[in-house]
Structures are given as C-alpha cells and as structure tokens.
Image (cartoon, rainbow, N blue to C red; front, side, top):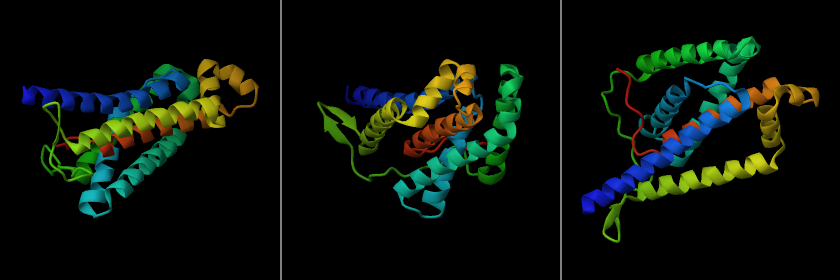
Length: 217
C-alpha cells in the first residue's frame, strides 16, 4: 500500500511537469496556430544546460535553473528570427517543417555535446532529505518542490496574460493576427516572444525534474 501511494505521488509530480510542457506548447499554438514539433527537444536541451551548470560546473541549483530558463529563451529568440519568421507567412506547413528541422538539429547537438554519458544522467534534487510520510504515503521533498513550482508558474503566467501589455498583445495576436497588425501590434515580435516564453516554461520544467532527460546515444 505504501509503495502504491508513492507511485501515485510520483505520477502526480510527473503529470505536473508534463502540464508545464503542455502549457508551453499551448502558448505557441494559441498565438501562431502552429505546433512546435521541436518543443520536446528544447525541453531536453534545457535539461542538459541545467545539468551542465549544476553538476559539471558546480553552480547552485537555483542559479542553474534560472540560467537554463534564460538560455532556452535566448536560443528560441534567435532561432525564431533565423528559421521561423522567414516562413511564418508561407503557411502552417512551412512552419511545421521548420520545427521538425530544428528538432533534428537539437538532437545532433545533444549527441555531439552530451552523448556517451549513458542512458540516464542523475540530476541531484534541490533538497537532500529523506522522504516525508503523509497518511502513510511517502513523498520526497523534491516532489513537493516540483508541485509548488508548477503551481507558481501557472499563477505567474495567468497574471502575465491578464495584466501585462505583452500578455494582452499575445492574446490579441492569437485571436486575430491581421486585426492585431492593423492596430499597431508588431506580430512578428509577438511570435518571437511566444516561442521564447514557451521554451522558457519547458526549461523550468526540465530543470525542476529530479533527473534530466535521457541522454541521446
């Protein structure tokens, strides 16, 4: 029974991380009406970046998490300008192909930089402490941190879309890109921020998880 409770808690934690990844995909789709097939690979890259800063270079956990988020934002901001924006007006098919191409590029980078480290790369949790027991269910402190982090990110982005100027511009672009362009919104720049914000969320999920994503062999 105790093992079943632990598995349930682990499933909830994993589901919360998937919810963050799904939030990033949804933000991109709502604004651009296009799926980003490289989103999972961006999640992977952000996890490896966090691993590099924290495990390989010895940076503090929180600093590594923030650097992974910033790095994910910066990578996609550049990629959007180079690969996505030139084809954004050519139809959804062109954008989808661009994201698929980016996916292969990111896999190649992962193989070249982090390949050969095995099928599993351990990422130390934020808190090294024994599991806690709630009504006979064992829960690790890292699982509680993940759940709290997911809730915090959801709240922050809810407030972001409701109260910030950029959030309202992203919503306007998602509703009607042509009308948004007519009222002076720079739709291309909004698309760039949309892709970057979606990836930053994936970066937060990747760096918060107990392990980093599996290595690409």
